[in-house]
Image 1 (spheres, helix red, strand yellow):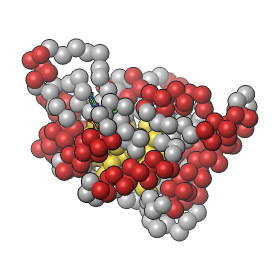
Image 2 (cartoon, protein in one colour):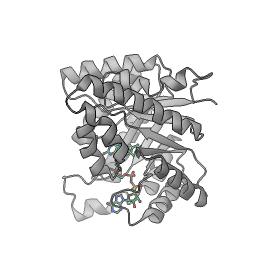
Image 3 (cartoon, protein in one colour):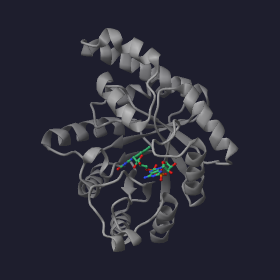
Image 4 (cartoon, protein in one colour):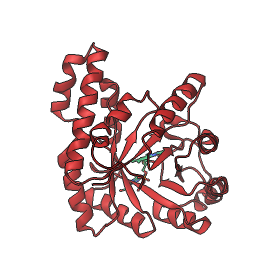
Amino acid sequence: MTISCSYEFFPPGNALGERRFWRTLGCLETLHPSFFSITYGALGSAQDNSVSTIKNVLAESQVPVAAHLTFEGSTKEEINQVAIQLRDMGVDKIVALRGDDRDNALSAAQRGACYNNVAEFIAGLLEIHPFDISVACYPEVHPKAKDADEDVSELKNKVEAGASRAISQFFFDLDAIDRFQERVSAAGISVPVVPGILPIRDFAKMTQFAKRCGTVVPKHLYERFAPAKDDPALAAIIAKDHAEEFIDSLHQRGYERFHIYTLNQPIELAQCAVSPLAVRPQVANA
Ligand SMILES: Cc1cc2nc3c(=O)[nH]c(=O)nc-3n(C[C@H](O)[C@H](O)[C@H](O)COP(=O)(O)OP(=O)(O)OC[C@H]3O[C@@H](n4cnc5c(N)ncnc54)[C@H](O)[C@@H]3O)c2cc1C
């Protein structure tokens, strides 16, 4: 079975982050990923840094780049201008997102000039350029969605607007992805769901992050990481084993594409996530 991986980065915010970013990216490049994606304003990072980071990656790397773009807090004109700038730089992959609520208060007139949902945003992007568009999906339901059905119906709208794949929020519960895939199939959504994988670097931090995202951390993971509470070296070994097993289980379920949330961190964990797959017959660009 042909498999492929994409790796997500956020724009580095200082000199140390910059070094870590390039070291990680350089190592992962050797695995021939399907693309590197660069977040836009995620985790509080400045949106402006995203475009300049993408420019640098395009100059330094042969790997295709997908630019995340969020419309929340921007007028159509503002976010369209960013998309035009990206198109002119040679970017043809976009991860089209709503984004989380931002602090910048828009006036009523500005709000009237904004995209209302991701499907509208995709339509606007496709008027600018025939971008290859990915969207986000939520195996355990987005925390703000009314219910699982509404969540999947929103995903269907995004696909009908032109999205080619749905990259999932990170999750650890294999039953959750099975149930989600059932809802997706029942809704007649035929684009691939790409599991989003978060290698666990810091278990305590991960649990806080998971809470905010609505990701359930199963009891067996708490038990598995408990002996490593004060032992980072042991935690790293457990994390590597877990990432490998998790990806392997998904692969056995038929998933061929994976999106790895690298958090720009040194590469061992991001790489180990694919190592059980890398030894299989083909690792291909997709
Ligand atoms: C792969 C991936 C990459 C991401 N990259 C970034 C990034 O680069 N920058 C960034 O800022 N964020 C990023 N996010 C986070 C994302 O912006 C948030 O999860 C956001 O809240 C929803 O975005 P969406 O595109 O999924 O929106 P939608 O598809 O609109 O929302 C998903 C579901 O949540 C519901 N929902 C969302 N917001 C609301 C609301 N305000 N009221 C009611 N229902 C709501 C929708 O109805 C839908 O069911 C990423 C998430 C994923 C999974």
